[in-house]
Image 1 (cartoon, rainbow, N blue to C red):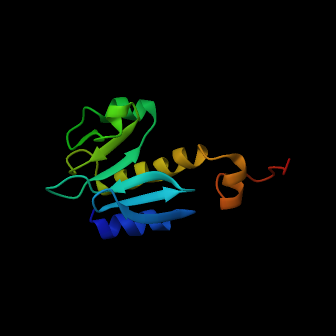
Image 2 (cartoon, rainbow, N blue to C red):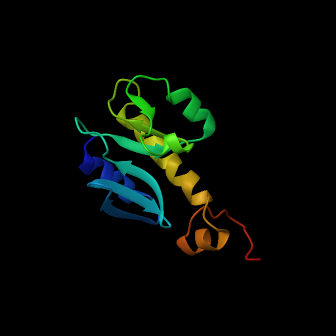
Length: 126
């Protein structure tokens, strides 16, 4: 996956915004909370995303992925894919979509509703 493909995919997800920060990284946010980062690896494209605790335990030991620099060292469950030896682009997209969902669920219910996120049919407005 190239950074252009990464940016196009992340931009297709609901209520996202994009900024360049932290030394030129492509940072994607949902509701002002980071869910994906393209960059932070000098030799080739690298993609960083939030995962569940179980996914973190599974992925952290696989080839081509590692606990994300800076984030995982602070106890956060973030993984960085720096080559395709384990996660292909389709798998990466699934993890990016799941990262978007995990981060959006951390937003307040009011903010989720305002952004049109995580709404289920028949949900009342209490």
